[in-house]
Image 1 (cartoon, one colour):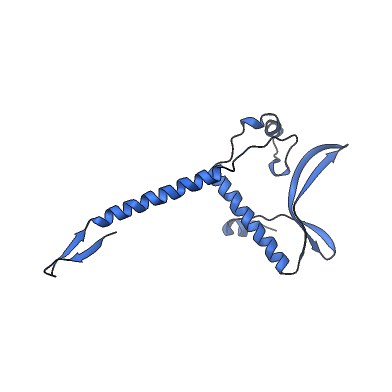
Image 2 (image 1 turned 90 degrees about the horizontal axis):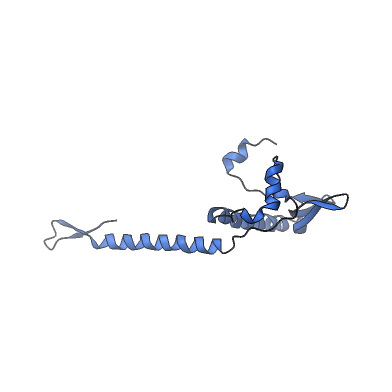
Length: 156
């Protein structure tokens, strides 16, 4: 950024260099804002112990699921980018359910936990984002956000 000031004679512009220090100060502010945001996000980072697979972490690889349970302490905590994405998703999900409620839909439950059992043993756990009544039937609803370009490319 450059500020131009006219010389005393009024005929020649004089470049003022003080603005450089102002811009440099803004760079410092931006860096400090980013650092504080990262610190705030990382305060919520954790890895939780699992006793069985989580529905959100199911994979085609049995070995990966085994290690998610047995070596869960070795799994790195999510980084600030992923934590920020989680936070945004939570806010967007809340907005979707607020709008559905405002539009007259009956929201039966939010973040409803479930367990999948086999012969009495819990083999998978998770949660459903919401349960919405639709024509007298409770309907499970998962809220996902996608880049609009990706959304258009997904078939129904």
